[in-house]
Image (cartoon, rainbow, N blue to C red; front, side):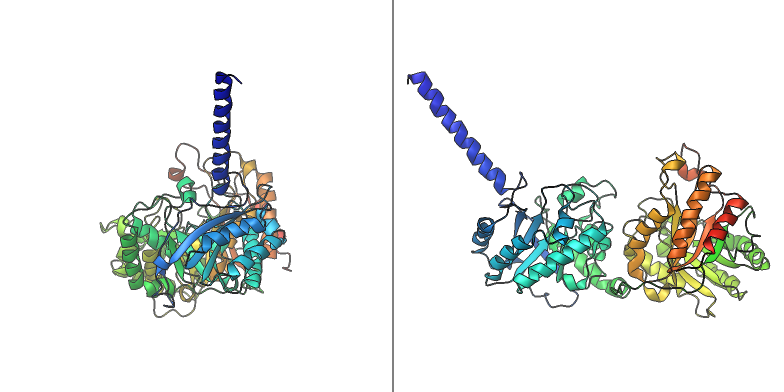
Length: 562
């Protein structure tokens, strides 16, 4: 072999060696999808928030955090590498990222037991560890991105898979504590698997998933971000581990300390309103639902089926006396009334931007006194809704995109303002039913009904009426988001756009859903076009329907519930 060939041969061996070496690293950090310990993983435990006080003296510095990816290639050798990584550690938390060879199927495969043998091997390894082991499985599930296979999946599928994983894990390693690991993003509570399957909860600051998400604005203030994340898991009475992301802010621990101190001060509001019934039972109403309309042009109110009318009022209507006239007109038509009270548009030059703070400081007390006086002037049932659709991250209303704790205080102040309620006033909490609705849950003692709005065409980007979602699809999604409240549902607004024959079919679907959901106490059709100012350059959708279409809906609705 001549000199040049020899150099070429040696160079080739070096390159091949480098490729093999890099491939080894590639496997270890889990870029190929094969089972491996991730030696580059960095998500330190920065703090603990524990209402029970059981872990209040626990040192997070003693808790190491490692990560392993498991797919169906995992075997004894894979788990021995994990054991080796744990050998020199004291207490340890293990994040498992479990994935499938088939995209989007990992949750169903876990639920079916297809990973049970691997979990048995895993349990044997962690059962031998002398110190405490926390196991966190498929985290950040609620963030609407596709960084991991288990994201953008049905909450029901995730919950089923998590429960199965937790049960198998505890069977083979009784010393383990199971950690449910959302990022703490809006919508977290939809993926709650239940207290029996979970020992601790974790949230993550500046997670990779959230860095990719576009659905909600990022909290720039770290202290506020920490408070919101912990607030989103307030229904889960479990210790909360606060994790850092790879690029950690050096001020994180200071921000955590300040956030926890502020939450301690607001604990009666935050946790005094966070009751949750995990029995799965739904309110079951025997009577047929109340039928109502929002019908300013009085086109449907004379229908014999209509029992209640919807009015929207603000501070101006009370100050100028127009609400009294509208209220008297509804009562004269022998109807009950839904009153959506919007605490803004004050005529006394008080800033709308401070409406929630103004409420709890008593700024609007005279208007509240007049409102309740009017409501008490009749024995008719009043469904009173305050500051609705608060959870949508926009600025259509002055009480949107605000601190949920401040909203809860304002809602409770308003609903508890009237001490002489004779029982005819029903308290209605009215989220839109968007992601994260339960952040604003004000407590079951100030809520008789939860209301949601269901519109077939809520998105400005959808202009083709045939692309609207069905009533059933929207209701199921929204009910899943408010179910933790455990209260009957009053659909205080719903509507559909399009040709009349399309509206008729859509309303038939709505009637079928209402017939089959006994938790629905009432429905109210929005018989008008929406506010043009909200829709910008495109025409506002017209939800109004013909009398014949409404009558057909009523006839379909009168089928007995079963």
